[in-house]
Length: 291
Image (cartoon, rainbow, N blue to C red; front, side):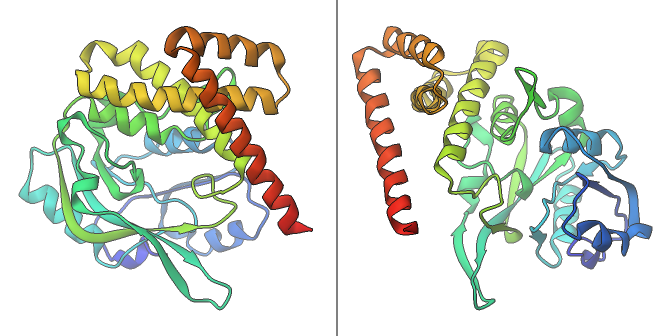
């Protein structure tokens, strides 16, 4: 509804629903006449759905709006004007905020980003916020879309790899100093879920993305980018070992721990132990709170 309320004159809406059973389909059907493309069926995750929407759209500029999130009023008009005023740019960014719906129905602002954080120039990712970015179609044609699978399983957090990949190619982008997109944080959200094991899965997947970035784009990385991704990789790889332990996959835990020690020394093992202890301490606190 927040998209339709933009009153933008040339709008194409592609709706991707994964066979929802919570009443979403009934709501979506009310606006069916406005959709250029619509489907409701089981899919292979968010990345697969986004890629399908991109492939079935025809617009020159694309934006991604997640369920529960919304565009702020007049956002599309201001973004459109920015593209007209800057015809050579690849991307327009807006500011985003994360809000939490409280029990009394009020909204609490959890986080807000600023102009500097959104800038992708200089091959540096300061924040992801893929939904606060409006992409020229040729970015997907030239640099690829979202990674859908890892080891035969659907990915969950491919926006990290996608935004980082774009940043490596010095794409031309401008950021408007307006709050144009709002994320709704809740426990069912992949991004804002606070479940400790979910966070381990996210770090494990991020390690895979860094490996992919180095393998496929390492030749164009500058030293600052390599250092940034290297630090992120070590942090994620430590938690990958912790996840292996939690999964009771002893062989994989041992293999990855040995790889980590060879790469970063014994300090890596100490870091794994610290993360493992922290994970269990947090779990114990949750158990005590629930009892």
